[in-house]
Amino acid sequence: MPNFTKIAIKQAFIKLLGEKPLSKITVQDIVDECGVNRNSFYYHFQDVPALIEVITLEEVDKLIATYPEVSSIEDCLNAVLTFAEKNHKVILNIYNSASRDIFEQHLWKICEYAVRKYGETAFSELKINKDDAEVMIIYYKCVSFGIIMNWMEHGMQYDVHSMMKEFLKLNNGMVEDALSRAGQIHDFV
Image (cartoon, helix red, strand yellow):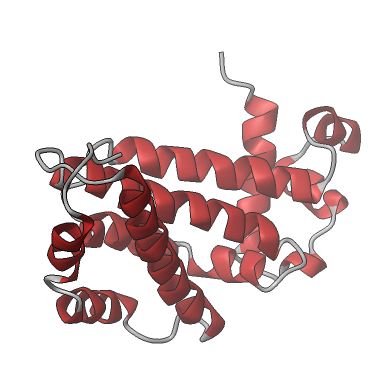
């Protein structure tokens, strides 16, 4: 059974994050917004960073569950980017706060999931050395993460979908070339 107080606290916090920077939000603001007392907040969350951690992890898990199979890296990352665009004020307020590390940890998780799932789907018929596969996963995870972080650094002001599409177009055939050089000797991870 859902805990309505916990849900109300999370919703109030997200609403406040859409209105003002994280540094300006207090526990008192959150409990005033949702109509509970401070003890209720602390019953469910140790502090505001713990609340951010819970919300971020839940959103990452929902996004991953929405795409159990990934047919392309572009589709999965575009889903992440679309989510970020819809929640840009909230995300930028977390990104520009002392809790940026929480955001970055979960962005790493999303990027790795997208790349790993795509690799499992796209190359399921091929044989490749596990070490080579892992290097490719790390490379594409880092590139995806870097593009998104650059977009965040620039206040989410440019068309990141076009940038991601252009990057993938410029790298067209690179994966196939890498697979060819890997010798196709073991199952892809």
